[in-house]
Image (cartoon, rainbow over all chains, first blue to last red; front, side):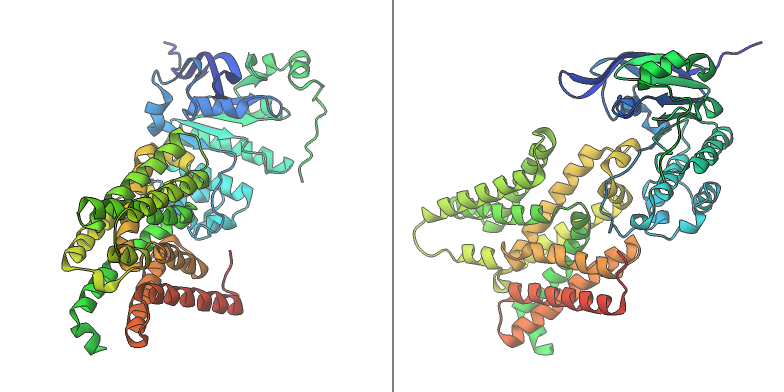
Length: 240
Length: 271
C-alpha cells in the first residue's frame, strides 16, 4: 500500500519582515515533503534569506503561519540544523574547530571525527575557526548541524564561496548527506543552472512566491525571465 | 614576603584577590570576545550612585554599589534588547547618569567622604573580613554557574544566532551573563576602585589571546595572568609604598606589554 510521505514544512500565506509594516516577502504558501531536497531560488535581494530565517524561526511571521512537523519552528529547534551564509564573530576568537563543535553540545569525539571526515575537513579539527576560509567554515557549520542529528537541514547560499566545479561536488555531497543522515534539505541559491540536477522541488521567490514544483516542470523560460529579468540558460558562474 | 602575610589587612587582601582575580579573568575572557569592555567601565562608574545612596541611607556602601550595579546591568540589557539601541550609546548614557547621580548626592553631604575615595581608587585597607566573605561566596557561586554553563556561554559569545538555533534560551543566558558580570565588577571595585577595575577584567584576557591557540588554554592563561598581576602588584605596592589598585593594574599592563613584545619578536602571534 502506498504511504504518502509526511510534510516536514508547511507555510500558509506567510509574510516576513524586519520592521513593522515593511514585509520583505509576503503571502507565501508551500509545503515541503520529508526527505526531499528543496531549493529556494531568486535574484539578489528577493527575500530568500528572509524566508529561510522565517522557516528556521529566527523571524516570526507578520502574517500567516509556519509549521515544522505541525509545530512552531521555535519549538522544533531540536530537529532543525541551520547553516547561515556567514557568521559574524571576532576573528581572533581563540577556539578550535573541535572546541566549537563541542560547544554546541553535540557528538562524541568519534562522531565529530567521522562527520568532519565525511565533509572533507577532518584535517582542520585543531585549526582556529577564525583562520578558516569561507568554504571551510561552511563545511564546519554543516558538520555542527549534522552532529545535532537534525530532521531538517537549512542552508543559506551554501555555494556562494565555491567555484563552479566545486558546486557540483557540493551538491553531490548534499545528496549523500540526505541519504546517509535521512534529512530533509532546504537550500537557498541565487543561481539556477544546477537546480534540476540536485533539487526535487524548487521554489521561486521575488518578494513573493512566483512558482513551486519539480524543477523540470517549473523552471520554464518565462518563469526564469520574470524571476531574473533575463534568460539565464547560458548563465555562467563568474566567481573566482 | 613572610612579613606581608603577617599583616591582617594583607591576609584579607590576598584571600579576596586570589579568588577575585580568576573570577574577573574568566568573565573578562567572555566579555572581551563579546566586545563588552565598555560595559565594565560603565557599570563600575555608575555604581558610584549606589555608593552615594548607601552613604545617605546609612548602609554599607559596598551593598549599595552591588544593588545599583546589578540594576544598571539589567537596565543596559533591557535597553539594548528591547529599545533596539546601540550598546555603546546605552552604556554611555548609563555610565554618565550613574556617575552624575552619585556626584550630586555626595555633594549634598557635608564633610569629607572617605568611602567615596576608597571606591574611586580602591583601598586594600578598607577590605573587611565581612567583605572577604561576600567576595568568597559570590565568586565561588558565579564561577560555578559560569563553568556549569561554559559550553552554552562559549557558543553564545561566538554567535547568538547559532546559539538560538541550537535550542539555547539566548535571552535568559544573556541576561544572566550581564547580571553575573555586573556583580563581579562591583566586587572588583572594592579592591581596585571604580576607575581601574575594568583593567583586571580586560588586560589578562587580551594578553592570553596573544599566546593561546585553543579556548581552554585561553581561559587558563587569562586566569594565570590575572593572578600573577594581582599577587605581583600587591607585593610591589607594599614594598614600593604605592597605591595597591594602581600597582595591580600596572603589573597587568607590564605583563601585556612584555607578552606582546615577545610574541611579536618570535612571530608567535598568528591572528
